[in-house]
Image 1 (cartoon, one colour):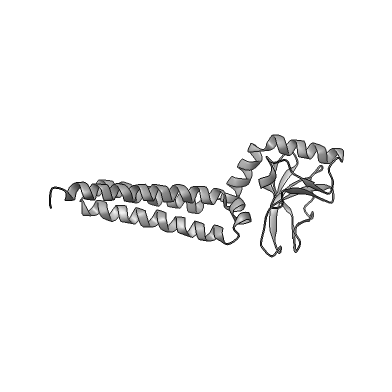
Image 2 (tube, rainbow, N blue to C red; image 1 turned 90 degrees about the horizontal axis):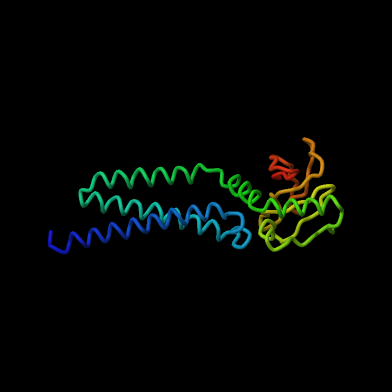
Amino acid sequence: MSVVEGPRRAGRVRRWLIGAATGWLALLVGHYLAYPLSAVLPLGGLVVGAACWVLAAGCSVAALVALLQRRAYVWAAVVLLAAAGVGGVLWTTDWERVYVDSQFRLHRGGLDDLAAQHRAGTLPADARLPWQLGHLSVDGQSHRRGDARYLPLWQDWRGESGVGIAYFPTPPGPDTLIATAPGDLGQPVRHLGDGWWWVA
C-alpha cells in the first residue's frame, strides 16, 4: 500500500458515510412528508422514496465494504448495526399516525378556531382555510359534510379514495360515514381530541 492510499481510502469511507447519513435523513423527511408530497407529486413521491432507500442502503453497503477493506471490523459492525437499526425503525414506524398526530398538535389552536366557527355556523359549506392550515387539505379548504367539518388530507389522483380529519360537534356513531373523495366514503376511525377525528 502506497503512502497516499491510506488517506484516499479514509476519504472514500468518509464520503460513503456522509452519503448514507444523507440518504437516511432524506428518507426520514420523505416518510414524514408523504401526504403533502403526494398531493404535489402523486407518483413522484414514490420515486423520491425509492431513490432515498437506494441512496441510504447503497451508501451504507459501500461504507461497510470500504471499512472491511481497511480491516476496521469494529467500525464496520457499528455501521451495519446503525444502518439496520435506522432502516428497521423507518420501515416499521406508522408514518401516517406520526404525521397526523404531530400536525394536529402543531395546529391545535387553528383547528380549535375552525371548530368554533363551524359550531357558530359562520363558515360556508366550502371554506378557504387560513394559510397556516392550508397544507392540511388537498384543495386548501374545509368542507361541510352533514354536521361535520372535513379537511381532505389526501385523495388519489382519480378521486376514488381519500383520507382526512373531521370535526364532529357531537361524537360520531359507529355507522357514521363521510365523503372523503368523490368516489369514496370513509368513517371516523380514531379520535384525535376535542371533537377531531381521523377519517379513513
